[in-house]
Amino acid sequence: MSVPRIAVLVPCYNEELTVAEVVTGMREALPGADIYVFDNQSTDATVQRAIEAGAIVRSVKLRGKGNVVRRQFADIEADVYLMVDGDATYHAASAPLLVRQILDGHDMVVGLREATDQRAYRPGHAWGNVLLTTFLSRLFGRACRDILSGYRAFSRRFVKSFPMQSAGFEIETELTVHALELRMPVAEIATPYAERPDGSVSKLNTWGDGFRILGTMLKLFSAERPLAFYGLLGLLLGLLAAVLMVPVLLTYFQTGLVPRFPTLILSTALMVLGTLLATVGLILDVVTRGRREMKTLAYLGVVGPSASDAAATKQ
Image (cartoon, rainbow, N blue to C red; front, side, top):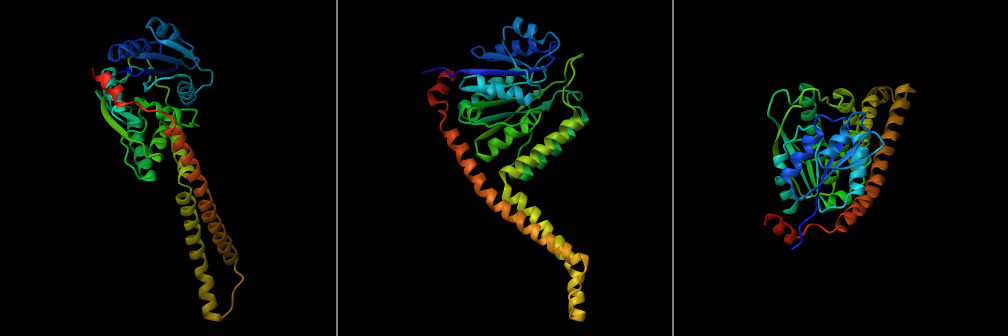
């Protein structure tokens, strides 16, 4: 029986205070795993600390977490991928639980962050996560509990069929939508979440990145559910046109004349635009179905972990 190859992927930018702790913790939790630190042009001693801790270090020049994850997924060959941030806030001892879920047949496992201290979650981050997670669940009709978690495990099928586009922190949203749209088996496991150590600074901008993530959700919704997106816009414009048409119709029924109100021209234009948007939604829906089929075929074209692999790991 073959032992599955496990790769731990650590995207890093200026994490000299914590990266060694992350590498050491993951090596203890997953002794047979290869640990890769992908440095995003750090200006401190992150690279040196990672090398000293025994990690395999790669460099990514394009700034942004999404660019780093894209390089990780493209370059690394493994059967199971575990992604964890380099800030030492995630629970290394939970790593085997996430990996086991992948070997048991899931394609993505999300580490649900349970704060061990009130300072682990900044208030803005906590509220923002709840709002964005709820919004995404409503858009795609499938419940999620922590779409912004950076602690995740993936199958090889997931990684090699993921056509990512994001450049920054919105990458976690795109990962979640990819799994939802292909109806992959997804698991969520509660894991302790600690505060950053003193001197370590978060790279996430609460408002700026929050709005960027929200924009990514809407963009993905329009791309993956075009009939619903453009159909809703068309319906809203149609309703607005109907409201504007009311005084025109009242005048017609009272006098028998069709007045040349500006509202008549505006309502007609809105009705035409709404019809065009609905038509665009229908056309794009056909295109999206084709794209989804191609992604599904790419997903099915990658061999997943076998039952013997899972048995070998358990032994």
